[in-house]
Structure formats: C-alpha cells, structure tokens
Image (cartoon, rainbow, N blue to C red):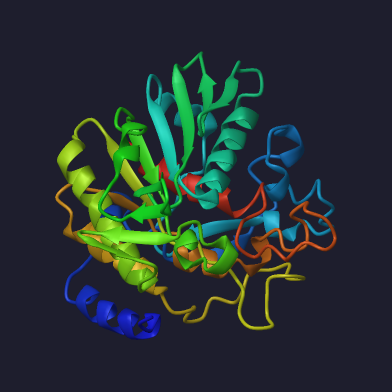
Length: 346
C-alpha cells in the first residue's frame, strides 16, 4: 500500500497552486475564514442540556454514561477576524421550512445528525415532532415547519453489494444509493473512516473498479476514485439553484501509539496544529474541481484540537470496551459543526 505521507506531500503541492474556491466564498460572506480561529472557554455553553434530549444514542451520551468532568462542553469556536452568529434553532427551522435536509455517511454523520436534532428539539421543546427509521433511513420531522432532518447510513457513498458466490463487493464506480438522496433540498455528505478498516472490520471481500476486481488496493486511491464517482453524480444531477450541497470534512480521531484521548479534559494548545490528513487533501482537491458548488464544512483542523471531546471511557459499552477516540460526546463538538452549517445555509 502506498505511503499516505508521500501522497499527502504530492497533493499539498497541487493544492497550493490555487486558492480554494470554497474558502474564498466563505471569506467573502463572513469577512474571514470562519474555520480559522481559537477555542474559547464560555460559561454560556453548552447550547443545550443533554438531559433535555431523550433520544441521544448511548454511545454519544457521555454525561449519562458517567463522565465526571464538564469543561469539554464549555468551549466556543471564535474565528480570527470576524464574528460567528450564535446558533438560533428557531431561525434554523425557518431556513429549512418546507425542506428536507439529509446527512449521508457513516457514524460521524450520525453524530452530527443527532446533534442537530437535539439542538432544534431543545430550542423548541414544545414543538411536535415525529421520529422513525425505515430501511436504514432515519427521519426526524417537525410538522409545524414541514421540515425533515434525515440520516442515511452509507459509509462509502458508493455501492457495497452482496454477490452470490462472491461475497460483498465495493463498487467504486457505482452509486445507485443516490436514489435515497436524489430529491432532497440540502445534502450533507461524509466518508473516510471505514476506508481504513482491515481484517474482521473490513466490510467487503472484493473491490471493483472498471473491469478489475481485486482483493485490496491503496485505500487512499480507492477513496479518491469513489469521491470522483460521487462528484460526477453531483455535477450531473444537482441543480445548485435549488439544492445546497455540503461535505463534512474529515473528522479526526486521537489514537497515536500508546497515546489516546482518555483522561483529557481540555483542548490541545493551538500552535501550528497537526498535519492535514491526506484524505482531507484529496477531498479538497475534488471539491475544487467540481462544476457544482459544494461547501466544505472544514472542521478537520479545529476538531484535531479537541482531544477532550471524545467519549473516551464513557461510550456506554461497558468497562472492558475500547476507548472511543473517534466519535464525539453530545452535547459537544458536533454542535459546533452544526453551528457552521446554520451560518452557511441560504
């Protein structure tokens, strides 16, 4: 498998040749790049009390699972050079009145979808809502606003199918699952973490691309091929005058050798920050090459500082469970991701 570090260097060179159109539009709208700044301790946070959101998934409900500290909930993102309007749940629902907003991706998309449903439910606790899941599609609906918040689990965006006598095949050139999100008004995509799984956690036996079927290939290369398949679908099928498209940047985990997120209660110091993950560079390159404007929720660098915001030992899976340094506590960091989404909605 090719070295991700080598590929990251090559990709960094090409990305430095041009200014990101996504970043340029954000700076033009807000007066600065809202994704560059600092974490500020703010006693008015969190934006909601997790106890007032009864449908948080067990794996994200860190306070209910016994986490003793609360400082991780008290940090607000402050951009350098411009203000970020405070999240307003009523105004968010006004913006999506009569619309369908869908998160498509893996459990990090689930993390963000759950955060948004909690933000809105606690902002309007008396507003009627319905919630149900059918065939892998979860729908949270506010009838008073005719507004739907949906989550569709699809860890790769492209198709993963069962084939008789062959097993599960990851089809890098196929995206028939798009029928689920084809009629939505606001699309928020995410994929990366499952591309790294091997052994028993690997969900396929074969990878198909063009006329080739292989047992494995460089995962970063496979990821880029799949993202190009997704990008071609967006460019072909999405009318940007009617539909807004977002992509959640690569959500970092905090496993590094013997070091992990366990026991951390404060963000890491800013400084230069960790290196940009190779997957994030691939994503930025593809977004900047697309004809259809896709807005990047560029959460990677600011989330890399939040080693304190993971469930760690408090994911609710028992005392012998592995430390969770991939997902995020709710209330917590994904609330800030949705703060960005709110600010960027038309």
